[in-house]
Image 1 (tube, one colour):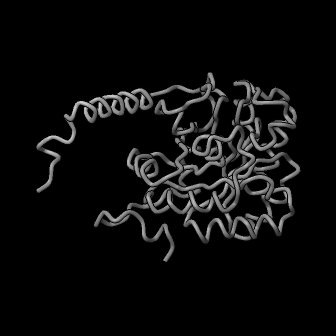
Image 2: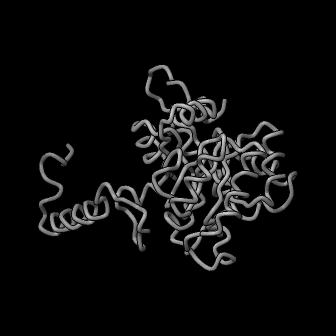
Length: 276
């Protein structure tokens, strides 16, 4: 039994899983697609309960959870570890797991071997890989092996050193070629990261598969944000394209400060928290 089949132990019948066909139908109907990252059981449960279409177990875990300065240190083992946890938490949303650097550059067979491990050991429904038109053969090979693939073009964090930092990508001709190659190779959706609105809109109109934007304007077929940015739990500089919908960091910091004061003043534990 896979992690996805086990699902959350709610006692109720499992809801129908979001599929690649649902995302295609959303694009055809003009309904925006929602995707958010999750790295553990609580955030996976919350994202699924909110009804988001896709939950991404991103290699951003290396930065958000592990405190690294880029996504490059994320390993296949770490992606499988976090992907399996999130897949157990999620019953309805499509779970997508990032293929970490440099697996999509080691050839088709190596990519299939790694992506197959991700699907088999996590219970997720798809993988995402960063790439240019040069990785189209890898996407095609994965799809031919029965592995759904989400593409990712524009700012590619795994190539941050080559791109010269986290900056807007403005080469419209190259971006369109990369996105078109990913879709032609069989990607069911393409993430557009840090792309000017006009270019993202052009790519979105030109593709027959959904685009999902992050820092790419409102004309994409959907939007994705990092969970910790969305809920105000980030510690580093938050990109300008992020909107924080809560102040989780402030709430947690205040709760810890009050608890510490209660412990020092012997107000905790009180009668209600004392056993026996």
